[in-house]
Length: 73
Image (cartoon, rainbow, N blue to C red; front, top):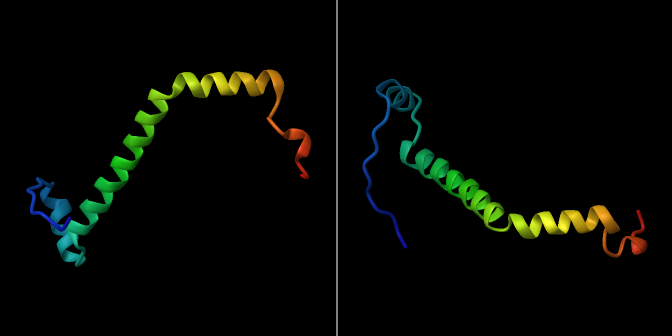
Protein backbone atom coordinates (compact mmCIF):
# COMPACT_ATOMS: atom_id res chain seq x y z
CA UNK A 1 0.00 0.00 0.00
CA UNK A 2 2.85 2.38 0.62
CA UNK A 3 3.43 5.04 3.20
CA UNK A 4 1.43 8.18 3.99
CA UNK A 5 2.21 11.26 6.01
CA UNK A 6 0.30 11.87 9.25
CA UNK A 7 0.60 14.44 11.99
CA UNK A 8 1.25 13.42 15.58
CA UNK A 9 1.50 15.53 18.67
CA UNK A 10 4.19 14.41 21.10
CA UNK A 11 5.43 15.63 24.43
CA UNK A 12 8.33 17.99 23.67
CA UNK A 13 10.71 16.23 26.05
CA UNK A 14 9.93 12.84 24.53
CA UNK A 15 10.57 14.17 21.02
CA UNK A 16 13.83 15.85 22.02
CA UNK A 17 15.06 12.71 23.74
CA UNK A 18 14.26 10.63 20.67
CA UNK A 19 16.06 13.12 18.40
CA UNK A 20 19.08 13.26 20.69
CA UNK A 21 19.32 9.47 20.59
CA UNK A 22 18.90 9.35 16.82
CA UNK A 23 15.70 7.33 17.05
CA UNK A 24 13.35 7.12 14.09
CA UNK A 25 10.13 8.40 15.64
CA UNK A 26 8.02 7.48 12.61
CA UNK A 27 9.11 3.85 12.74
CA UNK A 28 8.72 3.71 16.52
CA UNK A 29 5.23 5.20 16.33
CA UNK A 30 4.30 2.81 13.52
CA UNK A 31 5.46 -0.18 15.56
CA UNK A 32 3.60 0.97 18.67
CA UNK A 33 0.39 1.60 16.70
CA UNK A 34 0.69 -1.78 15.00
CA UNK A 35 1.08 -3.51 18.38
CA UNK A 36 -1.82 -1.56 19.89
CA UNK A 37 -4.03 -2.52 16.92
CA UNK A 38 -3.08 -6.19 17.36
CA UNK A 39 -3.94 -6.09 21.06
CA UNK A 40 -7.26 -4.36 20.37
CA UNK A 41 -8.19 -6.80 17.57
CA UNK A 42 -7.49 -9.71 19.92
CA UNK A 43 -9.55 -8.12 22.70
CA UNK A 44 -12.48 -7.54 20.35
CA UNK A 45 -12.28 -11.12 19.03
CA UNK A 46 -12.33 -12.52 22.57
CA UNK A 47 -15.27 -10.28 23.43
CA UNK A 48 -17.20 -11.29 20.30
CA UNK A 49 -16.49 -14.99 20.90
CA UNK A 50 -16.85 -15.02 24.68
CA UNK A 51 -19.96 -17.24 24.61
CA UNK A 52 -18.22 -19.92 22.53
CA UNK A 53 -15.04 -19.72 24.61
CA UNK A 54 -17.01 -20.05 27.85
CA UNK A 55 -19.06 -22.93 26.43
CA UNK A 56 -15.90 -24.79 25.40
CA UNK A 57 -14.28 -24.17 28.79
CA UNK A 58 -17.40 -25.58 30.49
CA UNK A 59 -17.34 -28.62 28.20
CA UNK A 60 -13.69 -29.28 29.04
CA UNK A 61 -14.37 -28.80 32.75
CA UNK A 62 -17.19 -31.34 32.65
CA UNK A 63 -15.78 -33.90 30.22
CA UNK A 64 -12.03 -33.30 30.03
CA UNK A 65 -10.03 -32.58 26.92
CA UNK A 66 -11.21 -34.12 23.67
CA UNK A 67 -8.92 -36.94 22.54
CA UNK A 68 -7.11 -36.87 25.90
CA UNK A 69 -6.96 -40.66 25.81
CA UNK A 70 -4.57 -40.44 22.87
CA UNK A 71 -2.08 -38.08 24.53
CA UNK A 72 1.40 -39.47 24.92
CA UNK A 73 2.61 -36.97 27.53
